[in-house]
Image 1 (cartoon, rainbow, N blue to C red):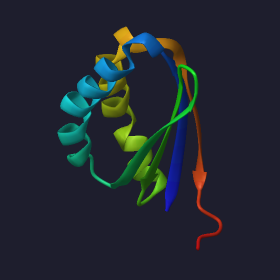
Image 2 (cartoon, rainbow, N blue to C red; image 1 turned 180 degrees about the vertical axis):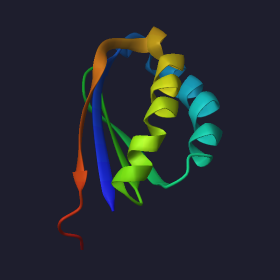
Image 3 (cartoon, rainbow, N blue to C red; image 1 turned 90 degrees about the vertical axis):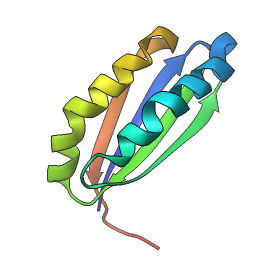
Length: 94
């Protein structure tokens, strides 16, 4: 299992609009990405978000990157900072 954690800033005053657009734009598109097993998004502070995505392998995560970047581009109007990505293989699970 391979994880990608992405943090980003967003316009807090447009949070509800951001969620609607994300749901309309991302949900179905993410389901088509080979190897993408799950995506969880959470608010980590005022105007700050984090996405945790799990993939079946590092190769799948790398192959998905162009599509993921394009999807993030669809939400650019809400972003206040560029996404920052950290990623790696799972070394322990429960």
